Image (cartoon, rainbow, N blue to C red; front, top):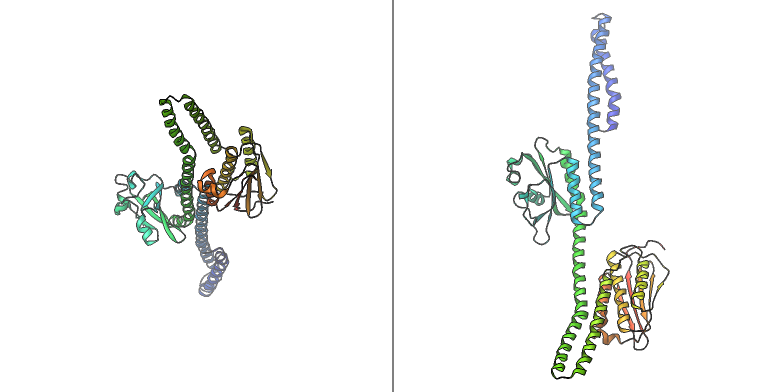
Amino acid sequence: MNERALRWISVVVPTTAVVVFELLTHVLFYEAVPAWVNVVVAFGGITIGAFAFSAFMFSTMGRLERELREGNRRLALLNSVATAASESLDLDEVASAITRNVMQALATDAVGLALVSEEDGELRLVAQSGLPLNIADGSGRIGPYDFECRKALMRGQTIITEDSRENAACAGAFPDGPAMTCLSAPVRAKGNDIGAILVARRISRPLSSDEVDLVTALGLQVGPALQNAQLFGKSGAIAVLQERQRVAREVHDGLAQTMGYLNVQMGITAHLLADGDLEKAQAELVAMSGVTRDSYEDLRQSIVDLRAPHSLCGDLRRTLREYVERFSLQTGVPCQFENGRGFAVALSPSAEVQLIRIVQEALTNVKKHAPGATAWLSLKTNHRRVCAVIQDDGPGFDPASVGRSGRFGLQTMKERAESVGGSFVIESRPGVGTRLEVTIPMEGVKGA
């Protein structure tokens, strides 16, 4: 019953009751009984009717108030869960926020959240509070005491067990504890069931139909947030693996080759010493000392670069300018930062990291292969992309031959740019210096 119907009832019913009562008393009792009796009967009848109607009205208003309060509680829970889920892309944090809010809002004894694993299709518990230990194994995989969540996923609807003692899937979870009311509600995202919310509360306080509807609605709302967190975690793992592969390749191209060279030269030096050729052996030792010193400097610079502060969606221009100044101070290589005008930088954190790494690698190459050269770094942006140009006035080289030899880390820089949807172009020839251009698309425009 809505407010409009209640308003009409409050007007029509009393009026109609009084009119009908007056007509009946006038027809039946007007001439048969004294006037004072007629008045008493009329007064009594109207009083009883007024009390009955008042009780009906207050009962209806109380029910409407309870429904409104329950609706507000439902909206508050949905809002708090949505807010908590949107504040993080970490799956564990999102899942914990969901179970924590459900437990607080419904005052349940236990809450759990299980998701379908992409590897084997098994349900795995990702967050829980108050659930017994035997509900999942060490890997989080849910066993037979699953609160009927597998059935809920198969049917695509919420399953309720009023008394846990009457269902093996619930009874095994609480063998020695009090009897529980168990509920399993599917979690859906993009039309697919990706998991289930598990709720348990003592049968002395059974779940109401409104609470069941609330958990069911929650399963429909949190699905996209959980799926986004899963995808983010997967992309993060892929990014870490790719970065490990790049680091391994750089170590192989740098330190491993140096160690291989030193191993060969040590063998040559040993033969020279055995033959008594001390002068050549001394020359080999001096050469190896220089290679070792250069390798140490390269390794030290690589460690500094890896620990250099990143912008991470902050001020990328300032980060690059500070790095250029620090690089020039530490290496003695004259390097200038030219900050071109344009749109504010709007790159993702991963894209910013890759751009900074490319700049670091390019400037390191200037130090190693263009001694005495001056380097320039410029950053230009428009509404679609960020363009970084690194150039020097060194001796230059033939990019085709260098690409075949694998030197300078050109392939690594190219892979870094392409991993974030960008491009990498190199221009160089002997005697005219080198120019590298890295272009990465914007994620959005933050203003001019």
